[in-house]
Image 1 (cartoon, rainbow, N blue to C red):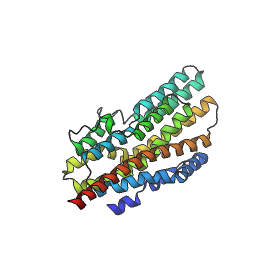
Image 2: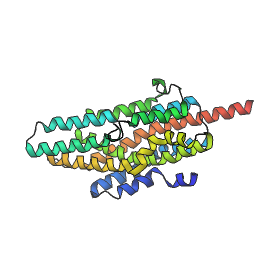
Image 3: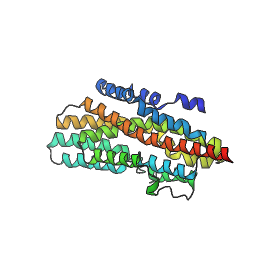
Image 4: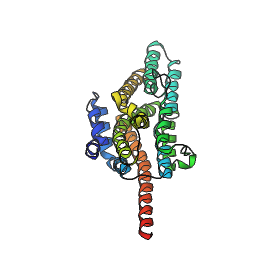
Length: 286
């Protein structure tokens, strides 16, 4: 398992998707952003490398589950951005209106699975609760005290980009989150599978339930399809507004996304290492 996980790094996973992008300028912006933000990206890798090495306390797991949730599950932001595109469409003439409505529909498509469409109404929020509860039972991991301030800031930044800031910025944010999340979910699936195998006595059904939230994102490359459909939304918006895509702005936003997320994962890793050191100290004095 460790060997497989080490070869399934976030960058190796997303690189294969970047290579599929037909827009050469977008491909370059994506590639350069990951390259230039290699340090914060390494913070994310470091977290998932450390995760399966110990059996963590409930407090540490609660901090992870609350904080990681804040960096994902952005349905409200997606909905807000789609509404903005719809509202703009209603102010335009026929062709532009159609293009903007298409942009809105394409953007909204990234939340279909999140909302449980075609999945009997089972939302990703419910799957995330199953994920956390599988490890923590009734432990109150959803309390605000378990959300790191860096994660809370990241969540606010994502929402502001999609609902308040320039629409281009909102689309860039949603698009990049999808391609990055594909890499992170793939990496995290290996890490959590290894953690369970080492420290938990889950039945096959319990393990399946615990990992369903991550698994549904990796299966059938759901996030890849989401990334591609936001690219469609971006192109429709560009045509409707007759404004060229600013690839420099896109690259800067992609780098900021990784930098902000890297601070979250670094903070989690620091807390994990503190827990390891505290346990070593207790052993040395006992």
